Amino acid sequence: MLSMKKELRPFHDHVSCAVCGRTILKGERTEAFLAPGGDRHGVCELCFVRADHAGWIRESAHGDTPTRGPSPQERRPLFGRLRRRGAQETAPDSPEDASASADDGADPGIDGTGGNGDAPAPRPRRRPYVPPPDPRHVRAVPTTAQVKIERALDLFNASEHQRTVAGLSRSLGQPWATALPDPDAPSTVTLVIAWELSWYRYRVDLGDSAEPVALLAKGDELTDIDQGLHDWNAGLDDEGRLVIGTAE
Image (cartoon, rainbow, N blue to C red; front, side, top):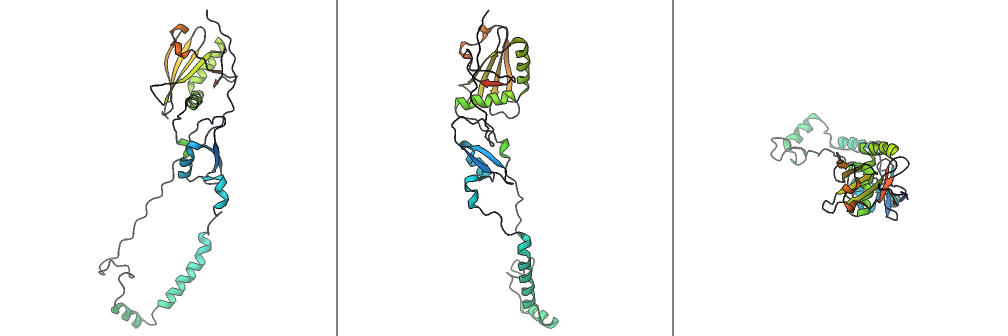
């Protein structure tokens, strides 16, 4: 019977990027952005461009932008006065004058015709406004192994499989766990969770927004697990969530 002593050391507090949702590494550069409405969000350096495209403003540059432009109510009185003044200056003195003006011929570029006086020129159609995509739905696949592992653990802990593993740990004790990126699939991380009498192997696809976590295999003997997956670099915390740590 294989027996191992397990001790988990937490990696660091989890702080997530508001755009891609991945956990920020310790020491990694982030910057605060202000979303429309004034909400403040932390963004990793990989997602600065996405935040800019979504209309977010860097908090460090917020003081350089105008707080607000003149409202329509502030502009309307001046515009109305100009319209009334123009109407008074161009109004004919009598019906005869108005008829004479029409007979003399108006500038086709001003009377709204297409140039021949046959039909009004069509007005250009405005494109409908399309709001930018919600940055919270943008999912980027990390490039470093450490960030891939942290993102995979976040996705696993948000799935129904985490509740299954937490329930088994209450009867079987604390498990050993391994989380390793798949060298043949850049967006995939392999998770193995094992006890002395049982083990489960999962695949986490970081690019799959529908069902990122899938159970691939399970068994009863630890010897059935590939030797390369015996590193045991993760385990469960007190709440039954899978976290990075060192198991001895």
